[in-house]
Amino acid sequence: MFDQLLKRLLQGEFICEVSDEAGFRYLQDPENAAQVDAFLTRLDYRLSGTQNRLAFFAAYRTIDSSARSDIRKVFYQFRIELQPVVEWLDMMMSCLNQDTALSPGDTLSFSGLLQVIEQNQALADRLQTFAKFKDFASGDDSVKARLEKLLTTLQKWNYLNLANRDTLIYQVTGKLDYFYQALQFIQEHEQIPVEQGETDTIQGSLF
Image (cartoon, rainbow, N blue to C red; front, top):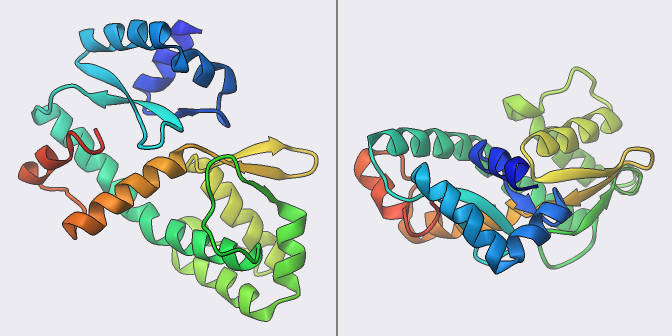
């Protein structure tokens, strides 16, 4: 467990109840967390958690030139993910007919979403707009194919976990808690930090 968690954390993965329930419970134990943090310290990392403690990840202990380079890469990727994830969250509120955005642990049924979207042209049109994002472009214009592309891309980005392959039930992962945290940071600072001086600002907030 210890070695596997370290490897995943150092690869930039988020450990949450959805993606790895056993690993998440392991890290919730203060003694285990301290041991993992002690090992990460040797590599100039630290064990960190999202603001609501719904996911664990490896953060930089100090921000040097190498760390700044890595952080810029993370935020460039976040820039790619930002708009489509926000639009997906907004669309899911409409599909599920709810006033609150998705949270880690929430479930999404492919068949349920497909039925709702096929019966609502406005939602079908919104789904089609995701084609403007390179990672969501589909060679098939059907609603089913577009929905498959949407969910599989979000799974690839680790916002979703395929909980049941037979019934195509997806669960929202703890990475979404980090997304909300990063989004709040961007709103407060009115920018995505990518320059050298700006990365120092985020050390205590996100890394």
